[in-house]
Length: 203
Length: 76
Image (cartoon, rainbow over all chains, first blue to last red; front, side):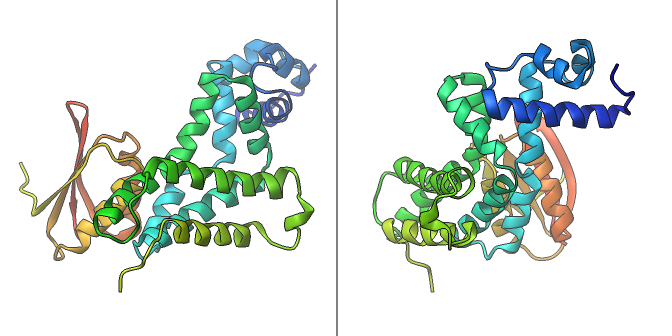
């Protein structure tokens, strides 16, 4: 019989087990029954804390991914320029994700499963970057601070670069980048991106 | 109804853009003046509350009207 835990402890235990299972087998590969079995409780106990498997999945992501307030911190501490804001929000994101690579595994599993529901959770987490880049580049083009280009493709390129850096360092542990810390690697990528779009700082 | 000194249309913008735009707009005001922000991103409610808390500006009002979020912020 499972030890009697406080509600907060039970909730934390459910999230911990669910995270391991989802990152290993994906959303569709894990049943609520299996999570309950691992915890030696009935599924009803899980449903007391989470209304559905989908809600549990999203909450697992929320415990790993950075909070919105962190992006507010980034903006407040930045000088407001495109490159400074981009660097700061990128560093906040990579810091949170690299602390727990199960997040990346869940993202990989979601892509393989082709699940629209889980895909949406990850798209929402990239949205601050893609929206910021598309919108800001549009304005910068008008101000002739960057070259004329397709802003949504530029946003996609950025997302791909940062995602690949995260996989290289946190999942594959690629020996090619062994001597470069993740933040440094991302700074190099940001520099390359800014050069590629022809970004010129004002003043 | 409070009269704002400046209005920022942040409709269609998502985090972090409403905060960025708000910061830029508030910087253009004098202390005590009021910025009205209109946004459609539901996350902007918490974002702007956090922004005001961190920067010392005062959130005078935060309302939902016809699917749009209206904020009145006094520059601190």
